[in-house]
Length: 132
Image 1: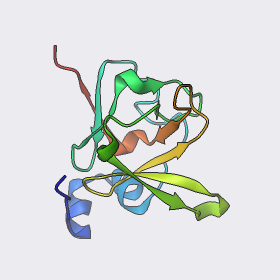
Image 2: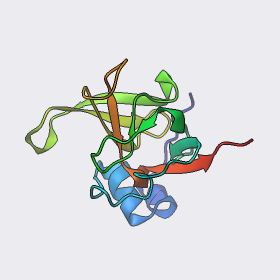
Image 3: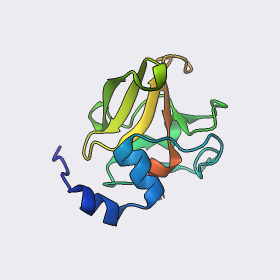
């Protein structure tokens, strides 16, 4: 996969202030405030920074956490995972593999069979309905 390298000035021009905060500064949107938490439409969730396909709606579930949750990425190479010890917690951060944009975190408390919950910020995603 080709990696997208932009300057911080280019990222600021491309993204809204909220998107920049989440994608480039590893921020988090408020729980239950994101536009995709309750989205039940059929389609693909792409990175809001670079349009890389990240998650399929078939793998989305209601975790009750207030953020869109998925059981897995659309492909193993779509995301990268990194240790995160910020805010006094030990977590696994999820980033877009193409632009390195922060998406959220993955937790080991999801449904079977994998038992994973990819807890993702709506603002870091762009949903596109599946074409018929």
